[in-house]
Image 1 (cartoon, one colour):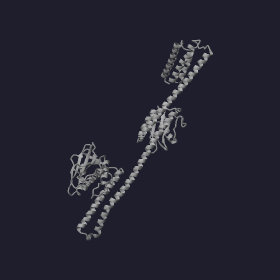
Image 2 (cartoon, rainbow, N blue to C red):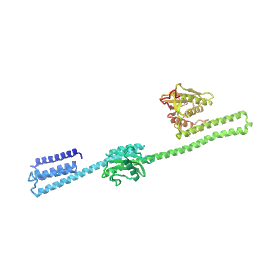
Image 3 (tube, helix red, strand yellow):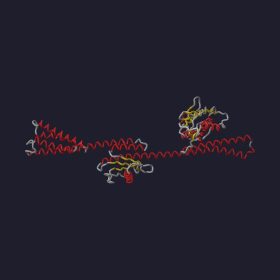
Image 4 (spheres, rainbow, N blue to C red):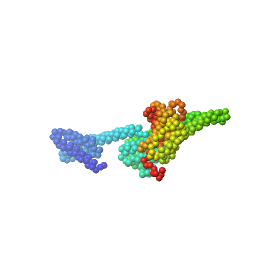
Length: 491
């Protein structure tokens, strides 16, 4: 106990005794000895209410002594002249001690009740906060905060990783690590008062829910007699273990849903692709068979028509195959082959290929000089531009504008057409695989825009669609521009 606390309590006892004695001197001429004894009893009651057992017992003995010395005849001696006075003095001392004991016990029970109430509120608060966590790291932060608030000793917490091993801090005492592993191995609390490893000066508690162990806790500087404290620590660890188990179950459910969605997508993918592959293959085989078996019977113009049909179907099949492979590659986290690229050169290469199919030269490009370089996969970026231009040629009969804009931190390539536009109810599904606009006379697997957006986002950019003023649509492909450009020697 702090010496200052002992001195403070001593002054309180002295003040109570002095006040009772002074009051008795004032009342001595007006009341009986029994009433004077009640004044001293009042001092004992006050001491029992405010002070611990030893201090209140001292006050009880002091009250009996002062009453005997100053007020029981013969006065100013410790002698008692009659048995009646002696019996009254002994009774007063006994009652004073009982009151002191009961007051101390009541105060102790009150303190325990207040502590239990505080701990119940802590558990309620912890449960409320754990209900909204979504990451194990958040559980770890809450565990540290609540344990350090509830216990004065140092608290160490370690969570279990995916392999079941504890994530221990390198600077921890090896004994702490051994104790944590042992409490998980034995699935029980270890330390003082537990009957397991009683020689330790710390409690080791597993973060357990059902058969799952999410980690372990070490609480140092504890006492074996603190049963309520140990139960409180176990309750906190039970809540933490349940939260970790809930997060693991949620992750498992999410993984299962993702796996199920992946299988569903694969099935839809295969069904759609098989249909879209079968159609051009059937056309190619039919035209090739006609040329092979009936060449002599066909006019040159008919032979040319069949050959052109084979070329067109083969080109469509090649585009469909390339889109399919790229979508599968990116959805399975394929690596990008990034290098410094000139957007002007990429646009020029795409236009050189596209204009073989654009006999009327409807595409007009606007590429300003001096554009910064971008870090990109050239094959994928040209595929985005080619898909967007192909769509514009397919759905629009008027002029098409291709505009490249340097916006500082990003570069934007916009393909603007004068086609029929996109219905408002179709915009949310526009970039999903196997979704196509309802425009008669065109065909496709609905992969073009899906692969374009996937490529854009894989580069850190995006692909968006906006209605064009005056009719048509604008598809804008953005890609980040790095502030640090390569030197002229490097390029």
